[in-house]
Image 1 (cartoon, rainbow, N blue to C red):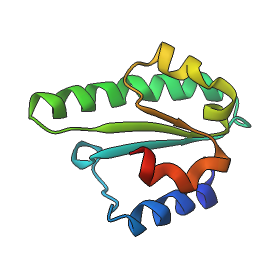
Image 2: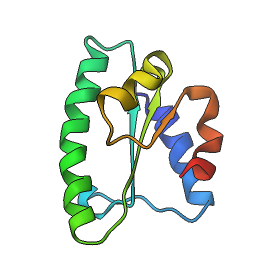
Image 3: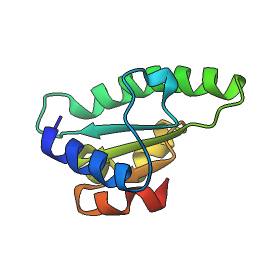
Length: 105
């Protein structure tokens, strides 16, 4: 995953009042930043989204809303296919749109 892009998204979200958490179960917003250069990148994203779905389901049962975003070049390449295959995803955003992430959340 691209550390630079992750930092850009983190800074953009922080400017809108969001803060990072080390525990995914505490996250109101979960962003998977993807890189298509890695081998089997798309399949790894879908595998991770299976785990994220469980977290979102548990948080929903506890009355906590969770927004899931897939960002990066896999998001750009896969587009609407991501939300078709993984309905847990609320937002798909490519590298050119990171600055819009707070508005999308």
